[in-house]
Amino acid sequence: MATKKKTDTKDLFAEYPNLYKTSSNDEIEACMSFAEDYKAFLDISKTEREFVKNAIDACESVGFVDIETKKTLKPGDKVYSSIRGKGIVMAVIGKKNEGFNILGAHIDSPRLDLKPNPIYEEDETTYFKTHYYGGIKKYQWTTIPLAIHGCVFTKDGKAHEIVVGEKDDDPIFYITDLLPHLANEQMKKTPSDFISGEDLNVVIGGIPLKDSKKEDKKPFKANILKLLNDSYGISEKDFVSGEIEIVPAVKARDVGFDRAYIAAYGHDDKVCAYPALMALLEQERPNKTCVTMLTDKEEIGSYSNSGAQSVLYENFLMEVFAKQTGKTFDLLAYRKFIANSKMLSTDVSNAFDPKYANVSERNNTAYLSHGIKIEKYVGARGKSGTNEANGDFVADIIRIFEENSVSWQTGELGKVDAGGGGTISAYMAKHGMEVLDCGVPVWSMHAPYELISKIDLYSTYLAYKSFIENI
Ligand code: MN
Ligand code: MN
Image (cartoon, rainbow, N blue to C red):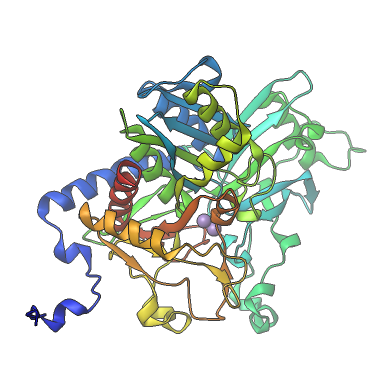
C-alpha cells in the first residue's frame, strides 16, 4: 500500500490575496512606475484615433514597420497595420510556425458623438447636438468639463484635427442640469429619465457675431461658424463627414493618500490595451509569432470595418502567415494555423464594490488589487451570447500565470441575471482559436471617470507578457 502524503487542508482552499499586502517593495515600485507611464499615455490617447497614432509612434520607435513594406517575414521581424486609423494590429515574428499568440483589446470608449447637423442656437446660446456612443448613464455627463476631440474631412481631401479642452487655458464645453431648487418633478423620475438622449446638448458659445445684420436670425450660431472657419477652415456641412467625440476634459489622476488607484476617462479598455501593447513591444525573437490587436467599435458591437468583426484584422493575420511561410497561400493551411492560435481577449470587468455589494456574489467576483481577473465566460441571462473558454485552455493559462508568479483572480461580471455584457472574444473564437477573457477589474465602469487599482494594471501587464512568451 502506497503511503499517502499528508496534506494541510489550508492548501486545499483557493486564495486570492490583496497584492498590496503580499508584494515586495521592489514590486510596488515597478507597479507605481508602470502606472506613471500608463497615465501619460492615456492623457494623450482619449480617442481610438489618438491611441492608434501613439501606438504607431511607440512601435516604430522600437523597429516596427508597416507590413506592406515587407515581402517576406523572418523571426524577429516586427510589423503592424493600421486599421482605417481607428484600430491597429501588430506582430513580432516567432521562431516556430505553430499558430499565433494573440492579445486583443479595444480602444474605443463610451462618449458623446456629434450628430451630422450638430450646431444650433436657442435663446442666445449655441449648442452641439450629440448622439451618445456605448452604454452610458446619461445623467453622469451633465455639469462636468468636456473636451472635443476629432477630425473633420473637407472636400479638398484634407483632414483637420480638432482638440479643444485639454490645455489649461483652453475653453471646455458643458451640459447643464437643473438646480435642486426647481427639481421637484425631475427628482421623481427614474435616473434613466433625469436627462434624455435628446437633451445631451453641449454648450459651445454665447456671444453674437459683431455687426450682424438685423435680419440675421442666428447671430450666435453665425459667430461660432465664423470662429470654426477661422480656426479650422471648416463650414457647417463638414460636420456631416466629421468624426468629433465629446469626452471628459479630465486627466488621469492618482486616487487616495497612498496613491493606490487611478481615476481616468477610458480605462475601459485602454487599461488592457496599454499593457497588451507594452507586452508586445518588449518581444525580440519570441518562440511563436506574437500579435496584439487593438480594435474599434467594441462598445457598439464591434461592427464597421474597424471593429473586431471586420476581416481587415484577419487580412493582417493572413498576410503574416503567408509572408512567414513563404509558400503559395493555402487557405486550409491558414485555417488550421489560426485554429491552432491562442488568444487572451483583454477587456475590463466589474470589481466588487462594497457600496453596491448586492449586484455581485461574494464568492464569484473580482476584488480591486487582487490581480488580473480571469473570466471563463461573460454573457447575460444564462451565459447567452458569450464565448465560453475551454477548460483545458483555462488550465493552461493558470499554469503559465503561476509558473511566472503572476497573481490572478476570477469571478463573474455580477450576480446571475443582474445584467450582462460582452467582449470581442466571440468574434475571434469563431476562427477556431482558443480564447479566454482576462483583464483589469474596474469600479464605476462606463462612467466618465472610472477607477482601477495600479497593482491590477501591473499584474495584468505581467500576465499578458507571460502569456505571449510562454503559451
Ligand atoms: Mn470593454
Ligand atoms: Mn465597455
